[in-house]
Length: 388
Image 1 (cartoon, rainbow, N blue to C red):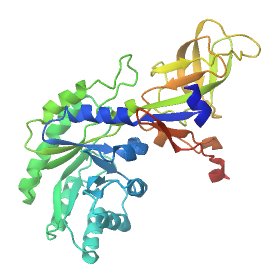
Image 2 (cartoon, rainbow, N blue to C red):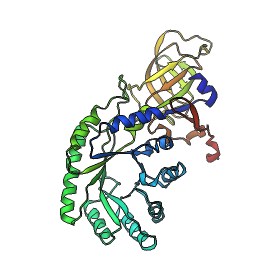
Image 3 (tube, rainbow, N blue to C red):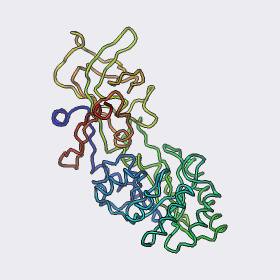
Image 4 (cartoon, one colour):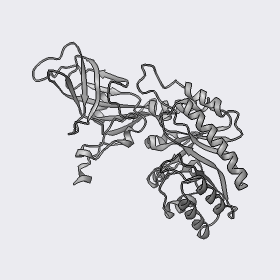
């Protein structure tokens, strides 16, 4: 690890593309025949280039994510263009790219599409209509029906089905209830509107056990139970997963920069922080993810004193806020300034969800490992330029 830090700097993200592909194969092998896998790239867009030749769809939720897919030459027929905000030009762009599927999250989106059809060369475009789960995403049942009526006159628009997603890290009981609900809704909707579609785009939000002592990359228990719930359905499913795919493929390396304490606590200051490390729901309290302590080979000491023995440490980041507590209690043996802490299961969200501009700290480098070689995807970048 020290050779990577010496070459690319610290903090540092390392993503393993082969591990991501293996995870995808493990998921696909456990899905029933009526289900296709879709990777939600918001979890980690740096994986797009490595995964673009895989047999799966890619959900993008912003014009910027669509631009990433274009830059990486991801075939448009693999793209599901979702997102709660779509302008007329966003819809026009996706339509002209001939993306696999366009998600309509509101009547406004539907009206945008109808307007695009008036001016652009027509081709058959699949759409899915998103039903709300009582939040800002998707639309009401009455608006779903209104969109169907707006689209009926357009023979080149194929309503592939309904899109439904309520959140992440869900329990199986909740997932089972949602499947029953959405299938009943689709059956009723087809009878009431005279439409005939066969597909449900569903994000089950399968949980990933960040704080387990067991290796999680081969843990597919919840997926297997979920697959049983949809295996005999009359509907085909597109299963959207992000966290569940990407989490095990990433590591985050950060360096111990200082060690200190008072009468109550021992503190370690790292050169990263909560602006870079974000497990689901943060990781406050006494829940510890998998962290490896790698000694530097020398002891820089702490204010001239050696650190000997095993003790509990609060791991604090480099941000000037009391909120920057990465871990409340991490047991370490003789940590030293210059040692590394390596956080596992960091492949989802941390690299895209951090509060990167706060306090103008640099963006960490991003490195990809393909099973043989390391390659730089993003060099460290200063953020003070954007804040000046």
